[in-house]
Amino acid sequence: MKLQQVMSYVRKAIDDYHMIEEGDKIAVGISGGKDSLTLLFALSALRRFYPVSFEIRGVTVDLGFENLKLDKIQELCSQLQVEYTIVKTEIAKIVFEDRKETNPCSLCAKMRKGALNTAMKEIGCNKVAYAHHKDDVVETMMMSLIYEGRFHTFSPVTYLDRMDLTVIRPLIYMNEADVIGFVHKNQVPVVKSPCPADGNTKREYVKRLLQQLNQENHGVKERMFTAIQGGNLKGWELYDK
Image (cartoon, rainbow, N blue to C red; front, side, top):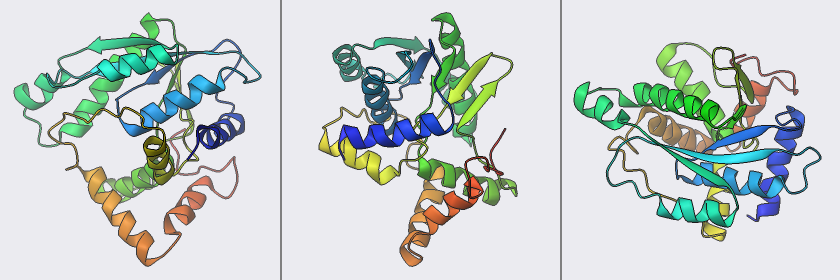
């Protein structure tokens, strides 16, 4: 997949949900994975010709794993002319050593988001862009149904009252397969997660379950996404308002 195709998906999502306004300063949360780097490429290119002017800043929350390598991310941000901030934390130590969490992903995600939001405010950003794509939307809904007994997922745009920050998700119309295609075609420098829980989570289980369902019932993931939308842009009945 070419960058122009990625930008087409991203621009449609931004326009449909009015994600970006004149003068926005947007932090792009960069984990080093395929999704966040695809989003970085897209927003970096889009800012050159989008009808309203906006700035982006790359931000990575370093969880404290000693083997995390961010050199290539720093080089990429420099090439794209994006200022880059690394937030040092001890989240890994707290989650895995001090608390020895049996379900580390939940606590880690909360702490990581807290550190990211705090850093954003310090560098003057009013919005943060998360790299959740269409598959994430459906997987989150399935996880909520299976593990919480409710229909629920995240919204394209979320305003955080306590932080006075707005979360936007410009990849909301992209399939994970498209992201993978873009990364491979353009040799994007993906950084492998050093987290010991990577690949062995509830989300990975649900991802595999949905893949099987989609193989046996072609198009089921797309139909689930359409159901979440409620059939129109003002739907999203399952989304967290």
